[in-house]
Amino acid sequence: MEIRQNMSFTCKLCQSNKHLSMNTKDAKNNQILSISLCQQCGLLQQTPIPSDKDVEIYYSHNYREDYKNTYSPKLKHIKRAGVVALSRIDFLNKNISITKKNLLKLLDIGAGGGEFVYLSSKSGFISDGIEPNKGYSEYSKAQYGISIKTMMLNDLEPESYDIVTLFHVFEHMTHPESVMQKIWQTLKPNGVFFVEVPNILSKNASPHNIYFKAHIFYYCRYTLEFAASKYFDVMVVDDSRNLRMLLKKKEVVLEHAVLPSTTDVELIKQRVTKHGWIDYLFVGDGLSKIVKRVARLKEEKKIMASSPKALLDSLLENEK
Image (cartoon, rainbow, N blue to C red; front, side, top):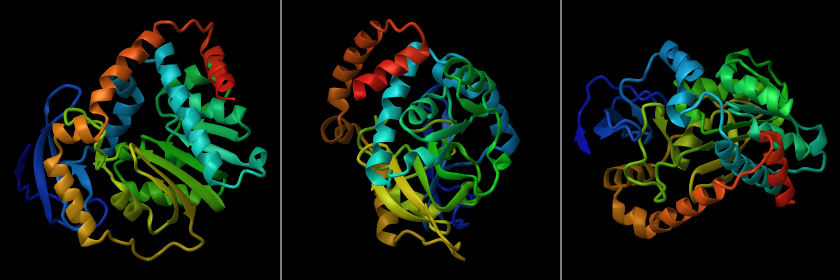
């Protein structure tokens, strides 16, 4: 990783121009990526940031095919997504009051194939989803009979949901504060925001599998808390692998976001510039991942479900 200075930099969160710029490689195609680390708040961002129009076109037409090699999900993708969806539902159930779960309206933004929307609705929530990719949104409606709309975040009505979920989507969005503001507006009073992003401080990610052209920002708990701090209070944080955070809607928006400490920013800087194979293999779970991957691929070859819906139903039944 080459560290250099880039004069045309402004942090999207704190507006500082104090930064380090790094040349790295896209994990998908090995092309050079320029990433800048803000030395005031610790946020990492692509430099330059793509235009809003380019991002909208990419996610509505190309992203799913580039990253899944298909325009509609395969059964192995459905199983993987279903397993992860059940773990997220369990995380919600453990950390929020669920005495009236059947009255809670839940919105999943970037719903993909609809696995989380379907399984959360089967688990008692009143669940909807939005997804910019027409192939995936149409697929989920046809397979599961659930409410997935092909639409963007800006089209949501204010105070229309009790829970908003955003799984591995926030890092793709070009205006993080505007997203936080919109979700704050979309939630009802005392509403809950459940966000999950890749964790740039995690030691469980291979050094060759961190940076992607589709990821505009790279978060850790300190920068995600900073991004949310004007609009939300932190309820629960789990950063043992990917970063999961439950946030509660503030009654009144703060005038200014709360910056991470200089100690936290320095920790981010050290971790990002020194991320290596030793940490991944011996501190993270790099060695065991190889064994787990082989076992998973063997298991996926045995998938005999008659339909995507039957596959998710079997996962839910096994969970129970």
